[in-house]
Length: 146
Image (cartoon, rainbow, N blue to C red; front, side):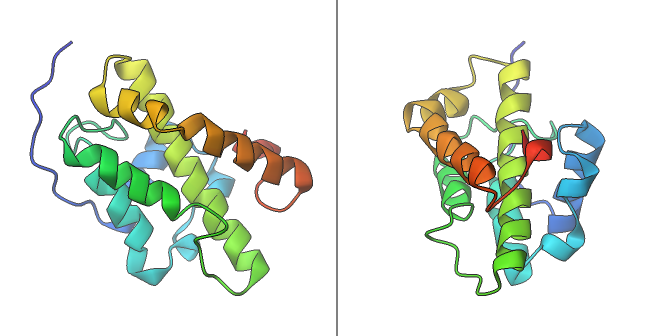
C-alpha cells in the first residue's frame, strides 16, 4: 500500500517508548524512562526518522536515512560517552532494541521502503553483527534483545 510522506514532527522521548511498548517489538524489560539520557537526544533523533502517522515505521522522507544513521551512531559503544558501564549497557540495550524494532516494523509493513533499503545498503547488518558479538561477550544486552 502507498502512503503519502508527511512532515516529521518529533515525538517526545517517552512517547516513542510508549509506541515501542504498544508495538510488542521491544520486551518491557529492555525499555524504560530511566534509560533516557541527554534529554532524550537519541529518542528525538530516531523519532525524526519515523513516519509520524505509523508508529515505528521509517519515513520515506529524504532526511530519514540520515536521521536513522545518526541514531545508529548513538547506539555504538565507541561513540557513546557514558562513564558508568552499567548505565551505558542499559542505555545502549534500549537504543538497539528501538532500532531493531523500527527496522523490523518497517520491513514487515513495506519491504519497498526507500529508507529501509538505504540503511540496509549502508551496512545496518554489519552493526547488528557487532551487537550480537556484544551479547555473546556479555557486555551489552542478552537473549531478550535477540
